Length: 451
Image 1: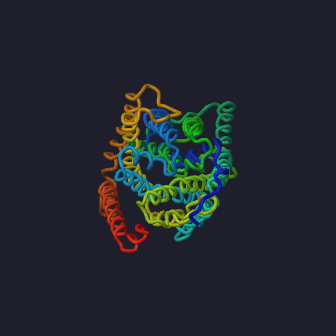
Image 2: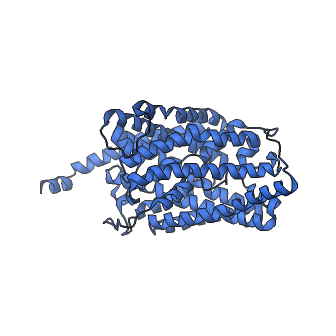
Image 3: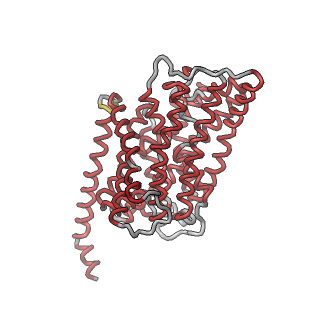
């Protein structure tokens, strides 16, 4: 139904932090390729420095804009208000297009982890069916509402991090009682620092995703800035502490690729700990996919409210869930499940990076055009500082474009493929405008307007 919903049931601070945590990270899963590509020393350096020029500026931007304009649709609304409906549509289009490739990563990562423990379970079509199962479970879960997703994210965050707390404890105990066996921090022989940086950027992106559910958050003006900064610190600790622990244990960096946390856990704690890491990895993939489903499905709803998408996307359940958007988005995400992990990251970064630049541009434009806009949280340093914080992310996005130049999707370069998707945005916007114009000109519409 398209009617109202119970607005007394909203996400509080801790569930919002947990949801943001899963939208951005979900845990150390996915870091293995950084270690394998760059070695321990450079991997740790990347994980400490990148947040300063990537995560911190983005979380500050989200904190200011989300507290000033806590509207459903989040970043889509900010860009639309600052730059107009055309660019608002492009922001949403780029984000939704990126989501097709981003969302496919988490079921893919889960299957990779599971294959470390039981290869026969993921062999042949079984792996693909498991991925489809994750998509279906999260669609049903999201139909239960934002509060259900937020509370579930909080529980899954605690459970999924537990094996890593044990792993860190075992590494420290082993070093204390048997002496530290520090592995070489140098990169492996086949080092790929550009690839390591790309994976690091992917592991630290997504802070703006939490903004799309603003109307379903309790006291958003207060809770968004707190959730952004709190989850940013949490994610950095979740990444760096396990990495330091396995480095201290002497496990060679060359042994690390996607899913290798299972091998590290088995080495330090035996088969039991390895099993818990696999199970926690499944919760990580489920939790991340679930939280991002909550975020992305609010975009088509907000666009339909503005007349930029068909009205069927406005249909909501009594708990506020845009159920048609959930079902159609889930179907779209299932289409990219066969892409490889590296190829997904390249396309995702290009599309997401373009959308992120529009958000920083909206921040700058609104600071200049609407200086009197009430901002419960303001980026320190005045308008110049608010504009300047976008320089670091812009530079990293430019580097990711250069680094992705060799990736291919079939016979097409990944950049050309991403560009074709981006160009489709203006064409779809034009088609929607023509459709709306024809609808207004129909005799039935004119008769209704006259009446």
